[in-house]
Length: 446
Ligand code: ASP
View 1 (cartoon, rainbow, N blue to C red):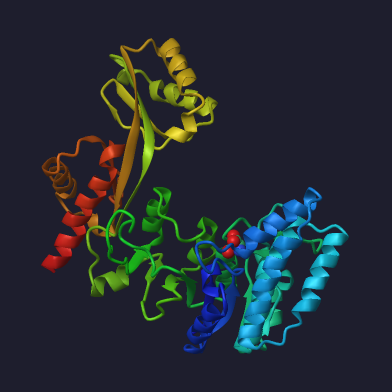
View 2 (cartoon, helix red, strand yellow; view 1 turned 135 degrees about the horizontal axis):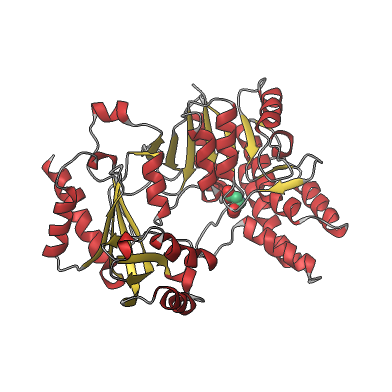
């Protein structure tokens, strides 16, 4: 069994967190590949090292003194070194970075130093071998990861070592220049490494115990989702729930490697397991109907009514092409006879909604053209809903009982999710009543 374990910024924010990481890594000999982010915030008022490095770079670029920010960064690592009795020569490391800055430094190189230094400290503390991401994560010039070259180098560099620590978030271009990924990119590094070494599981350690059934800011102490499929996760994240970098899914999914989201501050909690296919485990323990409830406020619905238009071939395409001209991404298009509604995120049409309305009016001369703003969409996601008769019926009656006016309802044909549109004002109430009915009550009944 081989595991890749990735620790996010909050897991390595200070020496106390480092000690928790050590406990986690050493409690399982299969945790052989350790990937780390840069130190995150220790408290609400603190700053992420990566943010400080970006800030430092901006100061350098505009010719403003960066000493204060640089000192904050250096202090953080010196404190970790002192607390953990490390021998790493940080004076030399920081002198080298300062020297690079003096002679013209690239943004990517400077911000990558957060992960580099964190990984150096962590490797020493764990007694593991440090492998620089610049030696094993290779990009092509188009920014995609060169999996073949990365595989070759990673295997070459790591095979002789019982445990390795690799900084996340960066790699090198073919010319050897450091390049960073998008923010949160250490998730991708972990996933790429898990793919290359054919890991049995990719553990992603963060500060939450996996995915919750619903947003804890809306539902008090929501239940944890023990297992979720990649498809369900996609539905959830598309509607707003986000714990993992989107691009971290593909490398592991393509090899059927499960991702386990875990909490460094609560290591005994099994977290959430994300898998391609949960059917084997579902047979032993059938899933609940609803895996998760998510949603987002602030959608706009533009509705066009024109009699006999349903019979006209290409009518809908012509409506949509106007949105395309304005480069507006469309969320959903519920239609009935001669009535076409287009749902979009309000932020996407803020600047052009009245122009779009004008174009629709001019081109279609509709019987009615309406715009409705302030709508929220709520998605009820669950592989357990498939082939269960009456799910939407129960949902509708629940909304009726709670006096929530339903504006839209849409179910995907794979029956993986039901999306409903309600007034922004009813958003929290809608989530609460779905949670009460489909999660709290049903689990009580089991
Ligand atoms: N340190 C980087 C960031 O803050 C990458 C990461 O944490 O994954 O975005």
